[in-house]
Length: 396
Image (cartoon, rainbow, N blue to C red):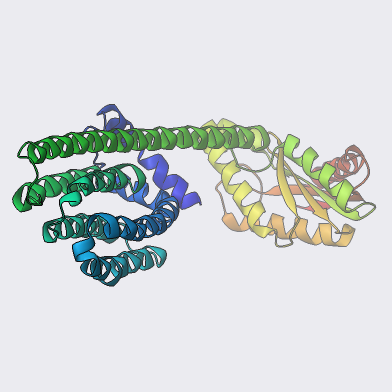
């Protein structure tokens, strides 16, 4: 989900440019076109599956009209409808049901519509029955079905209409004895139907594509707003310098613990960087900030138990919470942290033995369902004793 969101956010400028261009030619840039086809895949499959079943039903119901208007070729009409066109339509529907790729699916729909139209024109050309002239408007229905119900791609609809008009004029399926004005009249009606179909298809597809782009931009705005809220929450609950939890986050965490793990013992460690004011005075505040970040990362890396937390309490002070930990465990963790900071060997001239940065720690124990102030006070007193004992040590 995060990868999809990042991909969508990365395409914002391209989507905006595409929307502003007016979608005139009904083509998206390759990346957006792939997203468009992917997002409408299931809806398109359902639409074509239902529309295809309806088309098969109606197409074969017209056998009743064949019996009335094309009685001289009724057997041939049955063969064409039931033996050739219907199996082809079923094969296309099967491919759609099985998840035929989008470009092959649309191409198969184009071929299916051309075959249907071709079959009607062939049957009309084969028949010499005078009443077959009244059958010609059925071709108009196929064009409207392709453009409005199936909603072929605009360019495929245009191709279908041009193919139909050209084939109709070429075959000229008019039985003997029909007045000369009938054929040009039907040609004009066919061209008009084709124009209406092409216009309707263009309008539908353009509006669908514009709506899709607008929906993508709305998703992008929502994602950006959600990420901004996450960032604000992080700023609210995270110390900006070290990335550790701040006092507010620590208080919220303790509130959660008090509900989930009542009366459980909790170890508390109060840590302080020794002679940090002198460090800042000697090396400068940027170096002091880097030092605090390094210490924070090291303290965090020493915690191994799930649920343990280290937070920046203020300035150069840190607090470690150890739910389920007793005084012995708290002392062991504090000693490990002191050793880890010494192992960094951050230079600090005038800091005492070794001339490196060290920390002092005070440990105490309390209960997760009690006010944190009491164990913090005890840990702070222990920290004061550690400093009085010469620093770089742990006191309880």
